[in-house]
Image 1 (cartoon, rainbow over the protein chains, first blue to last red):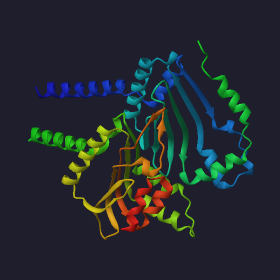
Image 2: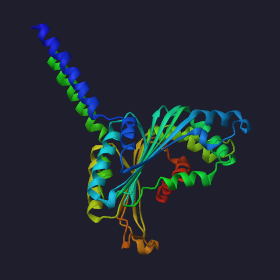
Image 3: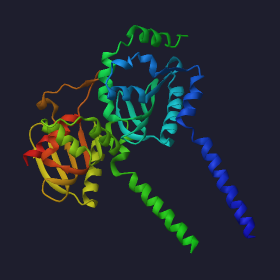
Image 4: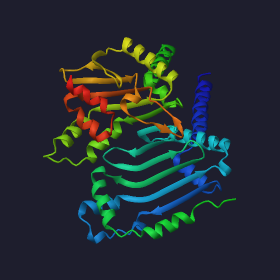
Length: 184
Length: 188
C-alpha cells in the first residue's frame, strides 16, 4: 500500500512538472516559434555588426562591448489591423512574460500604449535584457539583448563608445526597412 | 500532523499571494488609468548606473536613496468614476495601514494630501503616499487634448515604499520625472 502511494505520488509530481513545462513556454521558445510565423517580423543581430573598433576603446568600454552577444527583435503587426488576432497574440505574449524568470524593472501604461522592461540575472551582472511595448491596438515589439554578465557600470561608457564608433546607420536602416512586412 | 503542515503551508502561500497583490495593483489593469510601476531591481540598477560625482550632491543623494527604495507606483486617471474608486481605496488603505497624515494643501489648482509611515526620525519615513484630486485644469492653464478628446486629470495616486529621506526627495523627483507636487513635502 505504501509502495502504491509512493508511486502515485511520484507520477503525480512528474505529471504536474510535465504539464507545467508545456504551458510555461519560455521566452526563447516563444521567439523561435514566432520567428517562423508570417505575422511576425524578426531580426537577430550579432553584436559584431555594430562595427565598434575594439582597439580604440578603453578597458571599461571594451568590457562592455565584449559582454554583449546578440540582439533579437520581434515585431507583430495584426493582419489588416485585426483586433481579435491582436488580442490573442497579446494574451499569449503576456502569459509568456508573466511565467518567465525575468525580473520586472518597470511597467508603464497609458491610453496610447503600454510597455515593460525586464532583466535576467542580478542588477550588477545582467545576462539578458528584455523590453516589450505595444500600442494596445495592432502592434507590439519585443526586444531582447543577450549578453554575458553585462555590468550596468559599463553601460554609460558603452554608450559613448557607440557614439564614437562608425555604425553604418544607412546600412542598419536599409536592413530594417527591408524587414517591413509586405502589404497584402 | 502532515495534513496540518500541508494546510498551514497552503494558508501561508495564500497569505503571501494576497500580500503580493497589493492594494493598488488592480488599477494597473484599469483601462482608464495611466500607470508607472518601478521595482526594487530598477532602483538598484539606477543606483549602479549613476556615476557618483562627488561634487554633485543631487546625484549623491539619489544614489543613496535609490538603494533603499522598495517600489514606486504612480497612477493617474482621467475618469471620474475611477477617481472616486481610487479615493475610496486610499481611504480604506489609510484606515488599515499605519499611516499618518503629513500635510494637506488645498489651493486653486488642486487638492494635495500626503501620508507617511513614520520611520526613525521625522524626515526618515518608511512609506510615502500622495493623493491629488480636485484638479482645476483651467486654473492650471493646462490644455489636455488627447486623441481629439478633451481630458481632465481627475486624480493622481503615488506610492513610494522604502527608506525615504524627505529632505532628499528632490533628487528623486528630478531624476525620475515625478509629479512636481511632491516637492511640497520639503516645505512641511
